[in-house]
Length: 333
Image 1 (cartoon, rainbow, N blue to C red):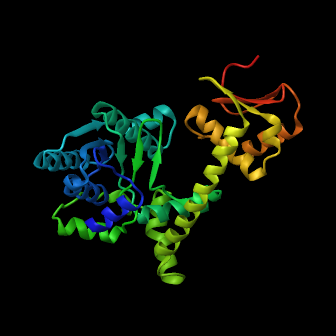
Image 2 (image 1 turned 90 degrees about the horizontal axis):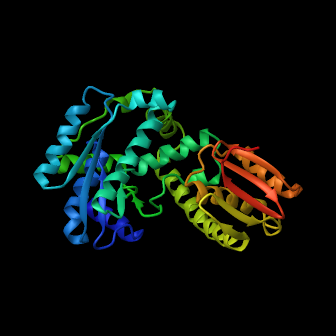
Image 3 (image 1 turned 60 degrees about the vertical axis):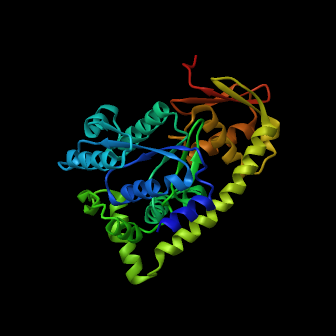
């Protein structure tokens, strides 16, 4: 198992000597496998590791899980950061789903710990089964091609890189590793409740497909997502080049592109370039849907000056003087 994880690290160049890595640890099998394996490999890899654990205050077992993670870290002399957050209360206050709120809090905390320790990477415990579940969720939601690539094995943000060293390991392998290492991970019982879409896919849809259509569906979908991820890398390079060619100027609040150069691009590149530019400006494309992209392409094609769209409350896109203005939303006259 350690060799498999090491192969993944080397194959995707996930870790370099001298890296400082914050590991998100819940206390479950996946995160404990990730933590223990990186602990076992840290001398060989030449890295420092830190643990970040969030207590979501949802389940009765949460405090016991926190103590378990702290005890493991204490025994291994690993610096452990813990945060308690009333996720359900915060979700209601911010009008978000519990899952979405939990994810938001986790990643904010991971980044906070990384900043404190001057870490350059954050490792999360997504595995091969998680990837397949994500692909199926995206299919059910009517995702575009990019959604079918699943969970990226690494992604870079401004000052940090998110890595998934056990992304190519199946859940069964992870559970076996935990058993062999006597880790005794904590099991989240809500994983067996079919309240959330992901749990329904994990506990109902995948077993049904395995029994009635394809017993190797995990490997099949993972193979497909890897092929699509390769294609996506190619598209990304084309879009980056198109961004450079259409780019005119940028400030903190605005990016301006050349309208004429934009309009001669293929539609598939136009769509991706709009998404890329919005992400460059806002750091997210949340709330931007296919219909918004179509509307922006139509607006550019019609080339009528001083016309604008507001796809969401964060951004205004306007055509003026043969330019496309992507502006952080300000109150419109």
